Image (tube, rainbow, N blue to C red; front, side, top):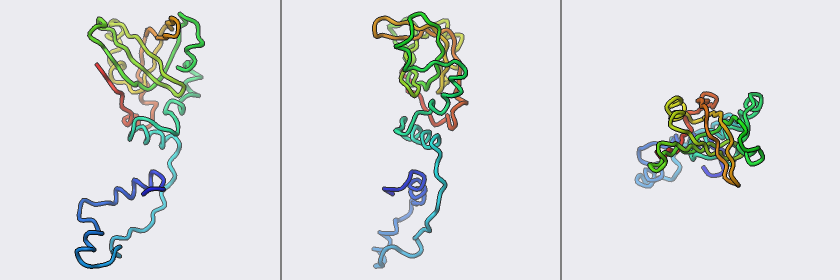
Length: 188
């Protein structure tokens, strides 16, 4: 299975049964391996698209070395005026912005008086969102259920510390193909 492309390796693994393995069965019967009846023919599987490959990586491990799911959406997001997380350090304090990213984590520490902190990620970096109680109540469903979260807010910078004070939220998860594969890490 080593040296195979992912799809072929997964196909090979799925072919393994919970029954006795042929090697041990052959040894028990005093026969040479491999047994003719357990040799599978080679199957030529179609190559996975780059997007499907990235989604499978995220499903399996929560990351990919081949790309980022948001990178496949960037052209449409750019047309909608959505900013990139990596550009936040170069923007002026107080500017209204729009961001869309995968939810990495949600936190509502007991010491924060009900404020929720959300970290999102796009292909250029991460952004830290501050969600006050009134915004949490108004946008509860997208805040808690989204895997791909869009926000509008105000950029808040103090030195190298950058936050987005959220004004509105939208669940953009349907934009992701296979979005049920992407899981947020919640620490509520």
